[in-house]
Figure 1 (spheres, rainbow, N blue to C red):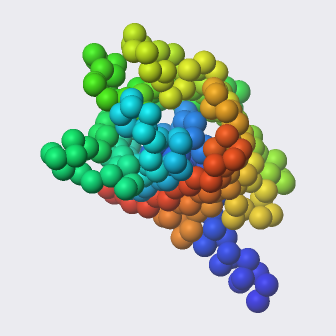
Figure 2 (cartoon, helix red, strand yellow; figure 1 turned 180 degrees about the vertical axis):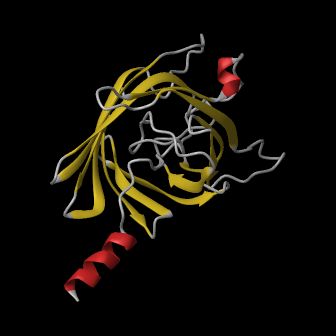
Length: 242
């Protein structure tokens, strides 16, 4: 009976290093990782940004943000994402002049993870900012190189991520990641139902708990800047025969 219960718990709360982040890409909590899901694996989901951490227009008005996204993977190397972010409490109409933020992201894994070296991925969030910009305040624009490596012992799975964000534009608005960012994920093999996350996003420290239910539903809850409650959920589905 005990073995059956443990097996059931493992299925209901299995661990996956390759999981989404607040921004919709594969990552830890807020920062991206170098991992790209296998070909055909896709995600649809939503995240929550508390008031004070999301601003669409550069007028000082801040609202609660709810990004929704769909992320597609191709050839085990390419990740493509579309994100639609709404400010809760705002009315979408021509009269109010408010329309939710829309953006695309592409990521390409340059190097696959090996025994002695990490995976390396290049990412570009929000094409419009990279090619001239828009009139609104970008919230998720970023360009970066990121590396990730996973280590396993009999007692835990330890994932490390280190990246550097650089600015390809001359906009006065800073990118989402500027300078070094880093983070770790820890899962205990005897309790693989929850993953502990700690990260530095180039500006502040964040912490989170993540889990996967039934192999398809990913959930995370955490603290931005160690004080603002945030989180996300995604559903994984497969568009290929693999």
